Image 1 (tube, rainbow, N blue to C red):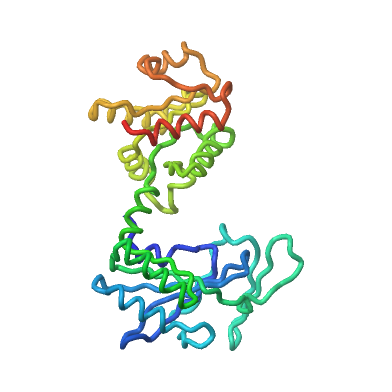
Image 2: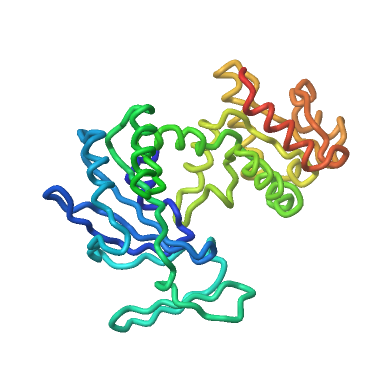
Amino acid sequence: MATIRQYFETDFDYCLRVKIRYDFDGESCEGSVLYDASAKSAFISFYFSSAARTYEYFQRFLSSLNYGQTGLNLDGGIILPSAKQFPGQLHVENSNPLAIRYQLFGDPFWRDLFSIQTSQRVFLYSETNLSQSDIERLQTEASNMGHDLQFRSNDYASRRSHFEKPQAFISHDSRDKESIARPMALNLQRKLCPVWYDEFSLKLGENLRQSIEKGLKECQKCVLILSPSFFANNGWGKKEFESIFTREILEETQLVLPIWCGVTKKEVYEYSPSLLNVKGVDWNSLGEDEVCRQIYLAVTSPA
């Protein structure tokens, strides 16, 4: 499970992050100023490591922040936005002071990133778990001070990690990636149904076998894209099927969700007679949206 600190460091990867320190109550608080070029907005976030802070502490902290007046110290430099997430180009001039210009795709003009005004949006990432009523009170107090507050603690990290854990493993042949597997994975992600799909889940340098086996063990369901290419694949596709079939025996539960893509009952039977006893859906006749809707219901409905 990801920690609240990891979320503090990785949230908003579409923004340019300026790492800062803010002196408050005898300590130096770690924070960031985040510049969102698309929204032409900047905001701040802070991380608090101690789990013993109180509602009153955060109230006093917020009351000490005055936009345009509070002294923020640079700490550790600048982290550029993710190239995958940033919808444009950046030009960094290592001058004094540092200058960064950006150009959004389709926009003919280059603009000064640091000319973006800081909004009143504040994110607090804390190891302290305040009660829901305290968070509501703190947000009300913050609003009265002129802040738009989001408070994120270990409770937030726990709930978010639960929804980020892949719920379905998509087993497919690489020849079906463009036409079926990728559209299916994206559709399910949009439905807030995270999936284990190689392009999403495999990281550079990661052990392929260990990652696949981990996904097969942890996911609630395994989506099998049954196609002529899948049946002809005696490599990973066959190993994934055998692994999930073994897990079904161990757990005595139904894990496989067959998606038929241009195959006949006879071909399915020749590959695995047991698959004919499992209700599948036909990709070609029902289409992407309906198939993904049924997958979503099968994965998220209580057993």
